Image (cartoon, rainbow, N blue to C red; front, side, top):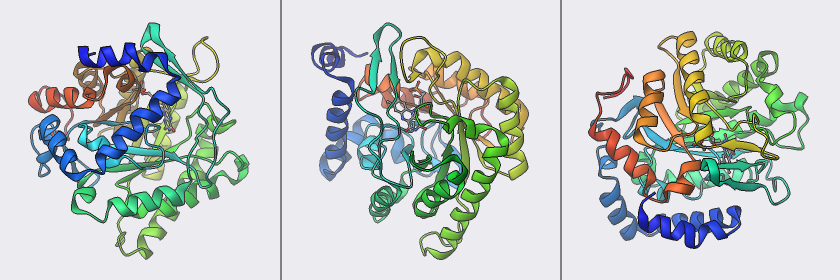
Length: 363
Ligand SMILES: Cc1cc2nc3c(=O)[nH]c(=O)nc-3n(C[C@H](O)[C@H](O)[C@H](O)COP(=O)(O)O)c2cc1C
C-alpha cells in the first residue's frame, strides 16, 4: 500500500461500512471516467501501456482482440457496467462487468460485505445485486458508441436470477446472453457464486451442459440479428469455484472440450473458511487459484483460454498464474487495500518485463 492511500484507508475507508466505502470509491471512478480531459490525462500518466492498442510488450492476443495488459478487473466490482471508462483509466487491461442477471434484483439483506483485515481479505454475500441484463446492455451499447469505448476489452459475467428455479436456469442465463452478446468481447457463465442458493450445484456437468448450450445458442442468435454483432461468435467461458474437488475441476474441463467452449475463469470466492457467512476472497485464495489453473491447463491442453483470478496482490502473483497456464488474470479484493493505482503498478511491471512469462499468447 502506498503511503498516501494508506493514510486514506486507515483514516477514512477502514472506519466506514465496507459496502458504503465501495459505493463511494465506485462513484468517484465512474464520475472521473465521464470527464474526458481528466480521464485522458490520468490514463496517459498511470497507464501509458494502454495506448499500445496494436500490441506492445506484455499485451495478449485473445478473443480476436489485443488485450493491452494481462491484468484486468474481476467480476463483481462493476455489476452494472457503469464505470468501464473510469476503471480503464486506472490501468486495468480489461474489465469484466457483472454478475448480471436476467431480472433486476436487490441482492441479499445488508450487511453483506466485510473486511477481513488480518488476511487483507474480503468476505461477501452480496447475492448478485444488479439492475438486470437490459440495463447493463444499455450501458455497454453507449460505451460502444465511441472509438475509445470500443477499444476496451469488456467481458460480461452472467448469473441466474434468484427467483428463477434451477430447472429454468438455462432460459434465464440465455436471456442475459441474448442481451449482452452483441456488446461483449466475451461472456462468462457464472455458476460459482456461493451467495445464490443452489447456484454452485449448476457446476455439476449434467446441469451445466444445457445451460452452456442454451447460452451459446442465444448468443449466436443475437449476434446474427443485431447489426453490431454481424455474425460474430462471442467467446464463452465458465467461472468455477475454488472449492470444487479436483475430479470436478477435471469434469468441467472435459465439458469445455466437449462443447467447444472458449475457456474457464478460475476462481471465485471460497466457502472454505470459518469467518461467518459469505465467500472469502483475497490472498488466502492465491494457492488454490494457481493450483486450479495448473490443473485446468493440463487437462485442457493449449486451446481454451484460462483467466486466472484469486488472491492477486502484486505482479509476481500474476506471473505465478501465467506460469501455471493462465492467459490473462484478474483481481478485485486487493484493490480495496492497495488503492487506485493498484492495477497500474501491476501492469506497468508486467508490460516492462514481458517475455519472462510462459504464456504462448503473450506478445
Ligand atoms: C464484494 C465482492 C463481490 C463479488 N461479486 C462477484 C460477482 O458478482 N460475480 C463474480 O463472478 N465474482 C464476484 N466476486 C468474485 C471475484 O470476481 C473474484 O473471483 C474473487 O474475489 C477472487 O479474486 P480476488 O481475490 O482478487 O478478489 C466478488 C468478489 C467480491 C470481493
